[in-house]
Each structure stands twice: as C-alpha cells, then as structure tokens.
Figure 1 (cartoon, rainbow, N blue to C red):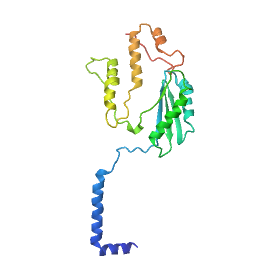
Figure 2: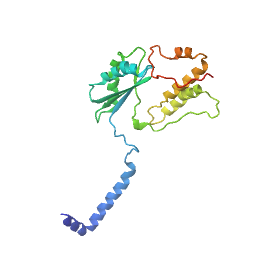
Figure 3: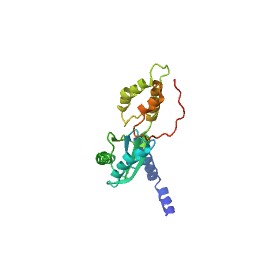
Figure 4: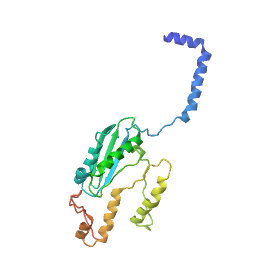
Length: 223
C-alpha cells in the first residue's frame, strides 16, 4: 500500500507539490485567526456562592454552609456540591455537568438560593460569586502610600469607591475583590489603639454568641 502511494506521488509530482503548497498557505492564513487562550479553561461549569457572617467556623458550617449545600443537592445537571466553612465566611461550589450553559447554571442556582435563604440566620445573605473561574484571576495589586499622607481607611475608600469601579468598567473584567483578612487586621489595629481598655474593646468588637475562631492571643501592646 505504501509502495503504491509513493509510486503514485512520484508520477504526479506537480499535483502533490501544489496540494502541499495550498495546505501550507491555508494554514498560514488560519493561524492568526484561530481563537486561543494562554491558559485554556478546561474545568467544569461551576457557580460559587459566598456568604459573610462574623461567627466561628462551626456555627457557619451548621447554620449557613449545610443549608445551602442541601438545597443545591439533587438539582438538574448538578454533579457535585462542595462547601468550605471558615471564620467569618462560607463558600459553596456548585459544579455542573460538562456542556452546561454557564448562564443557565447561574440562573438555576439563584432560584435554589432563594429557597435556601429563608433557612439562614437573620441578617445573613448569600450571594453569587463573579461570572468567572479560578483561571480568571489575572492580576493582583496593592494600594501603598509611600509618603504616609493617607490612612488605611482613606486608601480603602479610594479602592471601594473609585478604583474598583474604574477597573470593573474595563472590557473582560468580571469583578474586583479585596483582601478581607488584611482589612480585618487593619480594623483591629485601629480599634486597639483607640481603646484604652482591652476588655472593653473585646466586649465591643467580638460577637455576642461567644463562639470565636481564634483560641489564643499572640500579643498585645498598648500604644
């Protein structure tokens, strides 16, 4: 078979050369027009549910994460539901079957979330994450005032009310988030410096439920 193919190609050299050149020209024309991603997203369609509540991980697991996870189980085209509970927040990942339209998945998740919202504690509201995946995290920045002319609260206000909206207006940007752990640490530093009595500060800032995520204090210095 191969010998006959080589013999035929040798007899029709002009046709073979012309075909190869045509295929090469078609490939050179198509190459810059083929859509491609630097990091192709091969993951399944998923929707992230985020809930903020200043309570311990145990309370959040029982009263927030568990009700949301059970509401999402058994939904059409849902393959897996994963919940993560930590101090102050809850994440629920709803993973759908391959080929599921992402916008249909978000709409369906929002419908199920409306029913689960009534089972959450008073004042706790779950919300859908941005319309993006983990591979969409492309840039991280920090606002730093080297001259010390602005406080952390002023930098935070600049981030939330000016810079954030400017970045979200750019084409292809789904959302702009901020480091919540750093914000909490900054609040504690400010409030500790403003309170002369540590016990009064603890009573004023910590939740009244009496369940906290941290079990020890590394150190405290009164300024």
